Figure 1 (cartoon, one colour):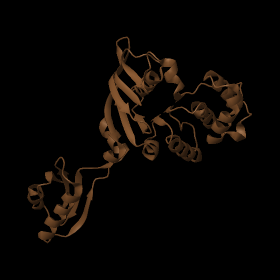
Figure 2 (cartoon, helix red, strand yellow):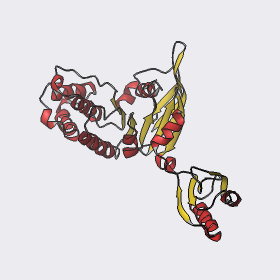
Figure 3 (cartoon, rainbow, N blue to C red):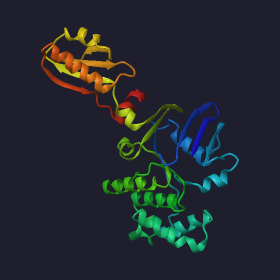
Figure 4 (cartoon, rainbow, N blue to C red):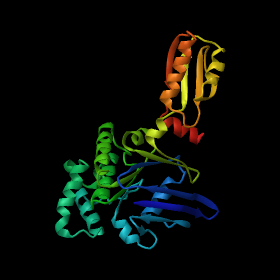
Length: 303
């Protein structure tokens, strides 16, 4: 569906994006993360054809963004970080204008506008001027224009920006629903939002891809934490186990960190450690793998 190859963008001597490559399959919900200035917004602008790359290419559904920009843009719904809206228009007027820009026939617009308004819960404000809306409502207007033409690809930059907790929950549900018929790319600073709706994460650091992984794989840790009454004499025993690459004391006495060898089974390693402790008649107080969250991984990469 989306193929980004060796994408680079320079501004004079400054390189904002450097040799970024990834592929996104149909139906995926992908979180694009990075600190401010990391280059993620620049990547999204190049994917939509809003910004030309210095080098590299973007292909969407077999079409080149460089050579078939208009056709590609028909397939994309895009919510920029600061969504441009016309404050003097009402929501309905603005969405009708957006529909006209997409080339939607006039007879088809009312049904599409009604559906977009309902899905973003804007019905109560539909005839009000955008200038009177709160930041959260304006953000939802931006989402409504992005989904108006039922695009195959949705690129959302900070979609929950300015929303209250109830609106955020609704936005999560909407994104999950939209992913049934569209590929979704989300950029956000709120890591909990990525964990809640995304199946995959791409982290950009200093203009380069620092991580590209499925979220469930990120949560899998190869570090086993053990708590027992045994002191230093437990280290040689743990190191002798075939599944363990490294063993070290952690924290207080009787606390150990065991690093598994590449390819070792978590279940088999845990069972082997438990059996070894039991054989020595040591009490086993705790045995669990280290919990890894997206926040933990992001901190490791950022650090």
